[in-house]
Image 1 (cartoon, rainbow, N blue to C red):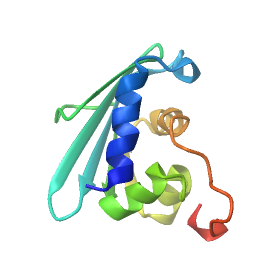
Image 2 (cartoon, rainbow, N blue to C red; image 1 turned 60 degrees about the vertical axis):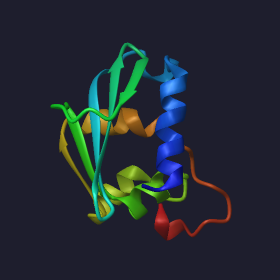
Image 3 (tube, helix red, strand yellow; image 1 turned 90 degrees about the vertical axis):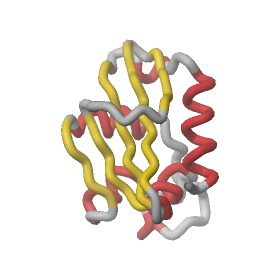
Image 4 (tube, rainbow, N blue to C red; image 1 turned 180 degrees about the vertical axis):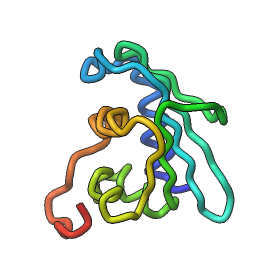
Length: 116
């Protein structure tokens, strides 16, 4: 799996609480394909975050290729734009995708706007 994705989820696990998500409740599951299948789960309860690799039922499941999500995790691409382009797919509650996106790094200066 890409380093940026691992770093993102490890950092989220260290946060423990994110005030931006104080009104969010649910589980976001990320299914990543890169020759092998990798899973990240993020439980959100009133802003409290818990990260794991558990394959469990989620309120929002994101399916992505490792290279694509690595771009998202590094701020070089936008998750919502990736959904609209068909680069990633989402099952379940799309509002949780929007909440999850608040945790992702913003666009970096100098990157091609077409990636976002």
